[in-house]
Image (cartoon, rainbow, N blue to C red; front, side, top):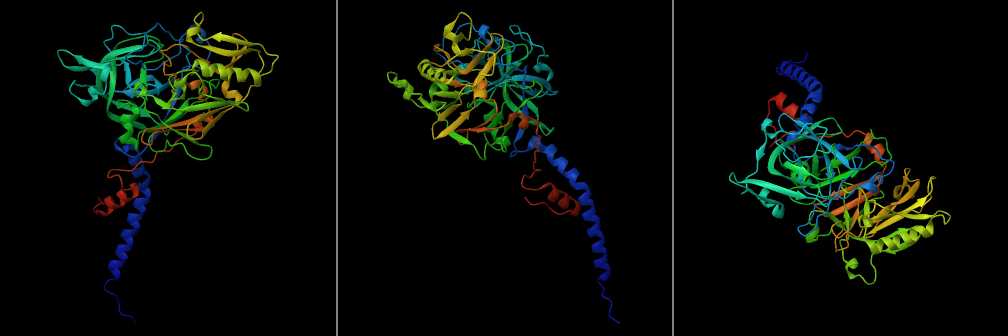
Length: 494
């Protein structure tokens, strides 16, 4: 007979408890993971996605623009002002988020051409009409005014000053479209709902509480969320919280069902990669320090390359001649370049179609003209390839660059010109607006100082769900490890 091992009972007990612990872990693992996802508010390394909302779907980005101005770019200190207004159906993309405690829903224009997040606030003596309730800072427990002595106030530079006698930082922003916002700089909690359904809470985000706002914003637009390169932009502020100062968006085409929203992603996971990606470098210029400025070497219309540079105007040889701007509806080219491009377009279109030049704004050719053709049938126009510095070639199909204008029974070329010095400036800088950004995944990376482009099905991307995986604090501990550590009463790694 074998001798009985005195440790056999202990071993059976260990196996029993081991099974119990494993069973508990398997049962509680989904719960732990849910807790991990809920801790996205405190996560400093994960990115997230949300949707961009169009007020209405337009058959053409030019619809009703012939009566209105369509620029939105922050004015420089020497930019002349002129009266500009915008139509309600202006083609802007709105980003929904909430501010304050308790939260108040905000619908703001997503604008990569400016740098401040602001919304209309009570009291508001000189404000434009809105459909939605105005934010009241007195009802928010997390609202804090920014003093004049802070670095955040100094970031405003020429757009900020002190409000006496309380020494509160006050801002004044003026845009090229004649919109203005004047108010108090503050810190507040911003909450977004990601496409995974999880709320994303970001604390102490610097924003403008506008008490005097006017201009071209419509009653659907509660403010502007600046996605530019400046230190106060939403991207710069949330960069350390989401894994880097980078974001990407994929805008659905303008003729898409208005219920279909575009997608915008921030931080880790927003990178544009894979087959078909082209990348170009950002360029720094003092007058455009907050904009995403790139170098366009020229465009190919059909099979003919048209260079951006032109003899007789040396300024066109400078780098940094194109702003990538989601907040401007149309795409603008300097006059000389535009004339050479449309000359080639007319050579490639059916010669039986009569070309027509239409003013973007009625009776005001200085606001820009566009090349159109008299036809109600689908125009079989040429593909257009944009050649950016560094060998980046972005091909746009004819469907992406020609738009129907049913009201005037026209098909129009998606690039327009302007002679206004306050729109593209004497530096001859063009604007790559959102009308030509449909079905293109565009990524902006401030850390790498690049912009990337990739053809994509933005409607399909919009309908897909994004699973955001986030770690618990400490950040390097997985949810499963946390459960094991807790259940076994061991110390978690630090």
